[in-house]
Length: 176
Ligand SMILES: Cc1cc2nc3c(=O)[nH]c(=O)nc-3n(C[C@H](O)[C@H](O)[C@H](O)COP(=O)(O)O)c2cc1C
Image (cartoon, rainbow, N blue to C red; front, side):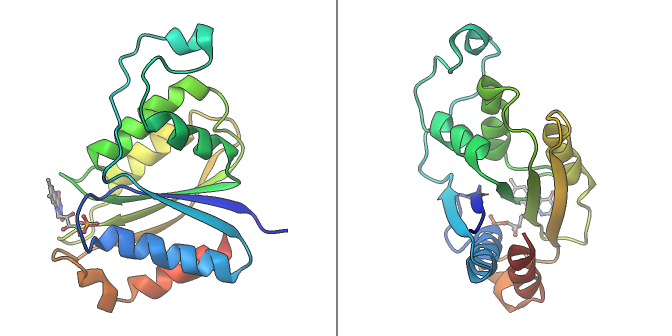
């Protein structure tokens, strides 16, 4: 029986580099016999966490938007992949908004591997991106950042498709 793998692709850009890598991860993961779902945050309604903590009493968020289902799928998956463009050396704001909204399901996103796929234009400088994802993962018991594909030097749309990172992403998917 394969694993349930949930991939979140954050870029809003058509022909997105990070999405191309997410799709390669998905191909590898399916090849290995897993069930894969990819969600694109583009077009989704995702409000910011207001820190009201109503979720601590209600066990759900009082905001009614697409983040609730995305966060629930993070909880239900056996493994989760976060795909993000690098913006000012950090993760995309829309991905951070999803991570923050997961507080409604605290402490459920625990006990599973998480993976990071990120693309940036310049020379590799991924420490803040890794730090943001680790900041999330390390808040949940038994959750780990189990693997990364960090693609530097990709600026234009689809630029990543001719790089070694596509195979790296596929192999990461197979290994999940
Ligand atoms: C708002 C914004 C901020 C960016 N900041 C950086 C950056 O700090 N370093 C960098 O190398 N590239 C930066 N870039 C370029 C993107 O990271 C790069 O084009 C990436 O491949 C985009 O991924 P995507 O195609 O999946 O959206 C930035 C792009 C935008 C739009």
